[in-house]
Image (tube, rainbow, N blue to C red; front, side, top):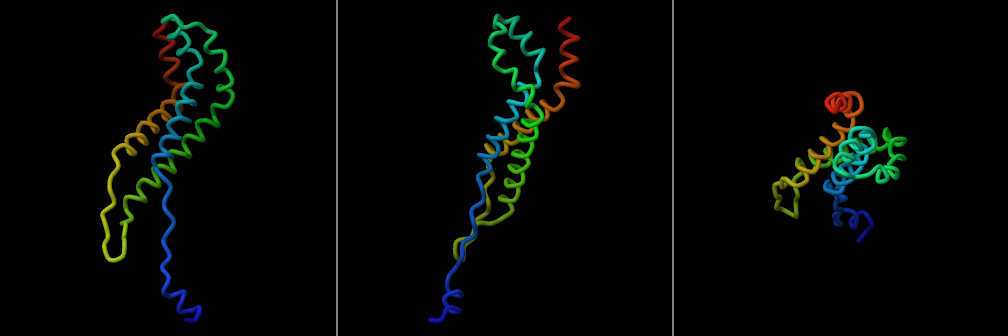
Length: 138
């Protein structure tokens, strides 16, 4: 066999798509960190009312400095997760002559949706939600 014939007879498999569950989970964790960093005043007041002391929050002060990076990282991970989720749903899985419909993952969609909600809340927390909660606390 010549090298041209070998190239034609071999089949190349496409690279597997990254797991959207991992991207959704990463976005959710980073978004939760951004939300914690955003809640510098109301969350400590609420927890102090429940009996948690301020010593717990002294370790979280560094998160306020890196809040924009946390939000940006979470948004990028979630955007990649949504892109892979929809890209993966469109592409049919074929093994030889048979093709299967792409399955829908409710768990992945739920994680991506919840992560997007957390990141969105982290974005609007400082300018909108926190002042309203502080007015209610007075």
